[in-house]
Image 1: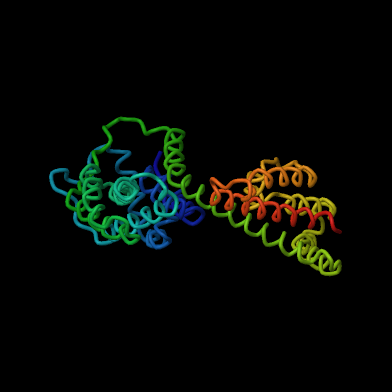
Image 2: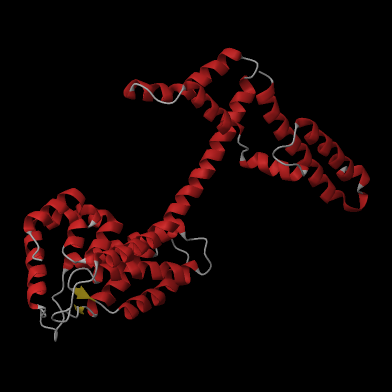
Length: 342
C-alpha cells in the first residue's frame, strides 16, 4: 500500500517525538531513536517538517521497485547532522547508564562503553545507512579505560565511537524484490523490548530515589508530629495542610473520595515505618507489629546482655552495642508517643 504524505504529516504532528511517522513509513530504527530521545531531543523532530515528503517518496519507491536506491559500492556522503547526533545520543545513553547502572561490576570498563556505543550505533543505523557495530563497540572499549572513573567519560567515548562509525558507514542492504513487509506486531514487539531495556534501569533508579525521598519525608513528618503533640491546634493546622491537596481536587472536580478516606490514607502513610525505625526494630529484635510493652521488654533484656559492666573481655564492642540499643529504643519510643499522646 502506497504511503501518503498527509498521513505522515498527521502522525508527525500527533506523535512525532515518539516516532509514529517513522513507524508508518517502515523506518523502525529511526522510530526507536525518536522513541528513546523524544524526537532527537525535539530538534530532529522539528527538522523533519521539511523532510517528510522525501521520506514518503523513498518508502514508496522501495516498496514498488524493491531495488537499491543508492549505489552500494561506495559509502554514503558524510553528514554533519548525523555525526553530531551520534555524539549527543552516545553521551545521552552514557548519562542514563551513569544514573541507573553505576552500581554494576566493571561499570566503567564494560557497561558504560557498551551503552555509549549502543547510542552511537542507533544513530548510525537510522534511515538507509548503517555502520559496523563491532568496530564501534571496540572503539568504546579501548577508549573507556583512559577516562576510567570520570563522570565526563561519555563525551570522549562517544566521540571516538562516532568517528569510528563515520569511517565505516555504508548503505543498508535493500529488501529483496517481492519480499513481504514485516508484520506490524513483530515490529512493535521488538521496539517494545528495546524501549524496556533502555527505560527499566532508569525507572528503577527513579523509583529507588523516590522511595528514599519518601522515607526522608516520613521521618520529617514524624519528627514534626512528635514535637507538636502537646499543641493540639498546631497538629490541626498541619492536618489542614496535608488535606489541602484533596480540597483543591474537590474544588476543580466537584467531588471525589470521601474526606474520611483521605484521612485514613494519611494515617496509613504516617504509620509506615521509616528506614531508621526499621533499623531500630532489627537492633531490638522485634517485629513491626510489636507493641510498646514488647519493645520495652526486649530493650531491657538486651541492655542486660550488652551492658559494659558485664562484658569486660569485649568492652569496646559492648559499648557500641549498648549505644545502638539505647538509640533504637529512643527512636521507637518517639514514634509511639507521636501516635498515642493525642
